[in-house]
Amino acid sequence: MKKDLKVTLIGLSLVLLSACASNEIVLAPDTRPGDQLKAEYLVGRWCTERELTAKANKEAGHSAITNLEKQFWEFRADGEWMDSVSGWMYNHYGEWRLEGRDNLVLDPKKGNAISYRASFANAGVELHLTDEAEQFLVLGRCD
Image 1 (cartoon, rainbow, N blue to C red):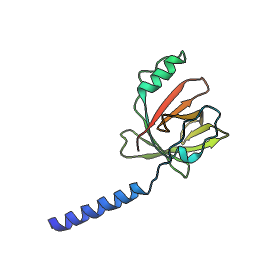
Image 2: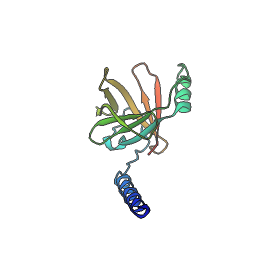
Image 3: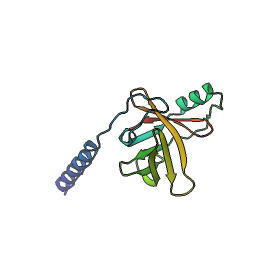
Image 4: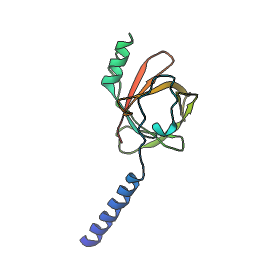
C-alpha cells in the first residue's frame, strides 16, 4: 500500500513539474508609456508590490496607498484573467486584453472594465499600471 502511494505521488509530482515547465515566461524589455506592448509580456503570474505602489503614488503627489492588500493575478494567453488570495489556488476573475499600444483592459466578470496604461521596468519583472486618475498600481512577477 505504501509503495502504491509513493508511486502515485511521484507520478503526480512529475505531471505538475512538466505543466510548470511548459509555461515559458517571456520577459518584457523596459518600456515607457506609449511603447508598443505584446500580449506575451503579460502572460503569467503577477503579485501586488505594495511598497513600489506606495512609492510611485507618493512621488506623483497622490496618497501613498498603504492599505493595499496583496493580490495575486494570472494573465493567461487565451485572455482569461485569474485571481487568487493566496497565490496558490486561482479562480476565473474575468478577461484581459491589450488595446492600442499600451492599454491593458481588465474586464471582471462582475463590474465594469478598467483600463490601465501599462509599462514594464526592471528587466520586465515589474508591471507599472496607471489608471485614468493617474494613480499607480505596481505588480511584480511571481511565477
